Length: 168
Image (cartoon, rainbow, N blue to C red; front, side):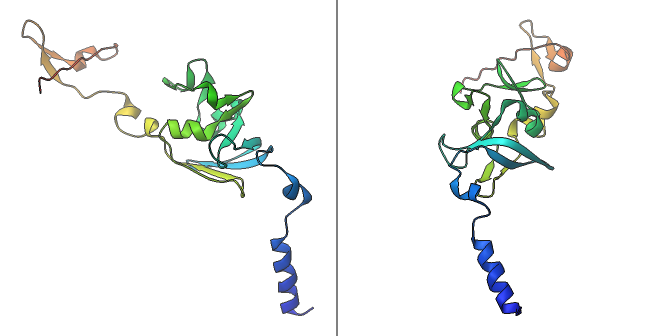
C-alpha cells in the first residue's frame, strides 16, 4: 500500500464518528467525562450535560463532588471544612448536581468542551491564599468605652464581632 493511500484512508477514518453511539446519543445523555481541577484528573461516569443555561453545563452525581473539589453537599449548602456556600434548589436535580453553576457561584473559572467531554475548573477565590486560608484577621488596637486600649489578638480562639463605622 502506498503511503499516500494509507494517509487518505486514515484521514477519512478520523473524520467519521467513533461509533454509532456517538452519532445517536442525544445532548445531555449520560456518558463519562474528565474533570481537571488543581493537579488532578478525575474521570466521572455517568455525568449529564446541558441544558441549564448552556451546553457546556456539567451535571455530576452528588456523591462525586468531594472527589473533584473536596466539597460535600449538606442541608446548609456545599461545605468544605468550616466554609459553606449556599446552594439554590435549581443546582440539584435528583441525584445530580450542577457543578458548573456551583463553580461560577464560588467565583471559580470554568472552561468546558462538551464535544471532548472535558471540563477544567480554576482556583476558588474562597479557598485562595491570604486571609481566607488562614482565617486570622490582622491584629489592631482600638479604645474601649473607657478609653483603654483593646487588641483583637486578646480574643484569639474566641468568636468576635467587629463593628466599624465612619462618618465620611
